[in-house]
Length: 183
Length: 213
Image (cartoon, chains in turn cyan, brown):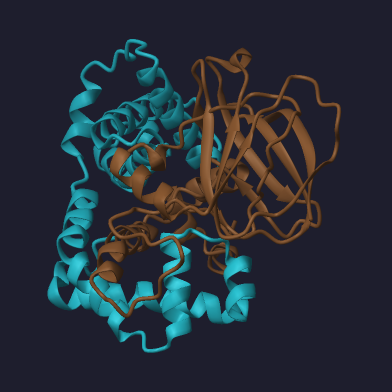
C-alpha cells in the first residue's frame, strides 16, 4: 500500500492484477453481464487506487473489503444509470492491466466441458453416486436431502462432488495444459 | 470463512449454482478476492451444472425422476421444500419463476406435474399455523403476492422449525402480479416457516407457519 501511495507503477499494476479477475467474476454473478461487470470492476479499482494514492486507506486488512464494497456500489450505480465517476487519465493504467486470464479460463472450460463432463459421468459406475450428481446439479436438492434419500454420509457426498470436479479438471488440463497455473 | 468451511459446505458448488445468499455470499466473495485460485474450481462447477443435463439426456441409463426433464433445464427444488395448500389466508404473492420463463420448458414441466397447489393469501393472517395435507408426486406450487410490494425486490425463505431445511430464493422482481412457481417431489410432514424478505435489506416483511401433515 505504501508503494501505491508513492505512485509505484509496478505496485499499482500488481494491485489491479490481483483483484481484477475475482472482482469481475463477483460482479458478473450479480449482474449477469460480463461486459457490465468488467466495466464496473475497472472503475471500482481505479476508485480504490485513487484512495490508496491519497493515503486514505491505511489499514491493509480492510483493503479487500473496501474493494468488494466499492465494486458492488459501482455496479449498483451503473445499474441505476448514474453517471460514472470521473476517472481521468487513470483509466489507462487499469485498462493496460486488463486481465484476460478469466476469459481464457472460461473459454477453455466452455470449449472442453461438454465432452469432458460426459466422460466424468460415464466414469461413475455407482448408480447412487450418479444419482447424487443428478440430484445436486440438476434438481438442485439440498445436501441433507440427498444424503437422507440415498442414505449417504456427508463425507461420501463431499467426496463424490469433489472427485467429479477434480476429474473434470484433470481431463481438461490434459487436453489444454494452458489451463494449469492460469490462476 | 475458511477453506474447511468451504469444503464441508460445498460453497464453491453452491456459488456456481447461484445458491449462496446473505452473509454467506458476502463472506465467500471476500474470500474469493483474496484467493483467485478458486476461479478455476468455480468455472469447473459451472461447467458441470451447464453440461450435465445434455449428458444425462444423451444417456438412456441415466437416473430419471417422475418429472422427466428431457430438454428441461431444471429448477425443481429439494423434495423437502414446502408445499403450501390452497388457502384463504393472507398475502398475494405472484412471481414469475425465472427458470420457468421459457414456454417450451413450462409445457414440459407442467406435463410432468401430478398436482398443483396455489396459495392465494389475503393481507390479514387469521390462521397461524396453516395446516395442509401433503401432496404426492411432482407438485407445482404457486404463491401470489400483493400489489403493495410493487417496486421492491423480495425473496422467499422457507425453513423447517427444527432447522434441517433452510432455503431462500434469489431476488424476485416485483410488478403488479407475482407468482412464485416451483416443483416439489414430495414433502416430509412437519412445521415450516415461510417468510417474505426484502431482498435488498434482508429484513422480514411477513411470515407465517405451515404444518404439513
